Length: 509
Ligand code: UN1
Image (cartoon, rainbow, N blue to C red):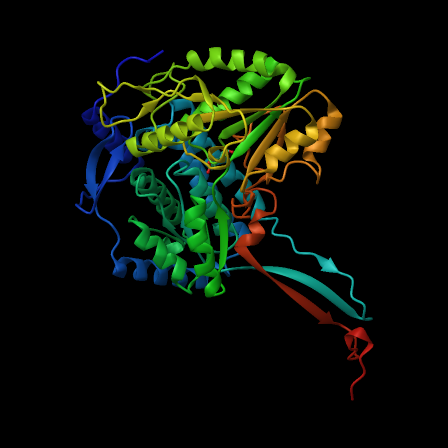
């Protein structure tokens, strides 16, 4: 199925400009790079990139703002984030439009992305009154030990195209209440939503009387990101993107003893056990694998199905895949919008060619659609591939809607297959057997940072910590106690006695 009528690039340009104007942004056109839309694959308008001097000035300004922000009481810092959350609510529709135009998300998912930002703002406002440290029993009489949490400094946020606004907000809302300031380098593919977010935060800052420079935006290519990575004034680099990018960022930040928080590639799998509720599993699987055109870090890429139900499940999934409405993400009926670029489609085809050469069989999908309406865009049918033996392609993340189906006989085998990839972000099991579910969630089960039961791998709520192990980089963002990565702790020993007692029973003098 194909949804009707793609908007033209002129329509999209007008809609983007209207959205930006409603938010309060007047775009200053430039000629360094183009804002583009994957809906037609064409450029919208030219923009100016940050120069070396701009980067230097932004880091210096954020550092100077930090010196006052760090001593602003945390609940007052929360007022800034509360105002940001209100502005996001007010402009939800326009912001979602920008996400659709630049990242290609269907309307419901684009609105979901803005909702995720609103949710993290609410969370961070609460957090601003809950930056708790512990009091620890001292071994010495008349002494108290305390753990105090302090702001860290400037946080450099490097974000990807696929969650162009939400991942920024996870970092920024939490960093701001923690007393840090932020310099943001978004993906070059999503400058417009970045301009809108920066503008709304600046407006919130002005309204609540916070320094403007608690946040600075730098548009540009990887050279801008590299400056953040190498600058000793940037205390924490929080980077989302490919494992290849993370491999460059981590050692460079470590070389100057900076901190990094990495959210890199995923290669997420779901185990489907014989007792699974297949109606629920089919829905969960199709959303996780084909939703967002397979371009979430949490996208379901591998299905590990028990041999007894494999044929039934595959048949049902094949039928569901054949019916997926692909087309304009602005159409209410569309479930699959475009890939970010034709290059992404080429990489998808290369992966499919390799898996077929290794004995894989394409069960549904894989064709390009709407090539006449939008030759520069890449509308791709989500693909279901049955893989015989686990081929090496299955161990790689291809940022496209490809779902590899593997089979298993015992739970041990399923878990071994599940964990036998370099990445460790998200995972799930569909089962009605509690013992199986608990084993999957146990230390001997999934090795991922996210492990679910009877839901897919994607669509995490902000209240939990988000991130993963191994090649996913080990970072944790968003909820739970992920905030601790944005602060430094100090251990205080307070002597309220009149004696100087040394620890460990040491005597001196
Ligand atoms: C990402 O793909 O980088 O769990 C983030 C999810 C979303 C966030 C994804 N809440 O799918």
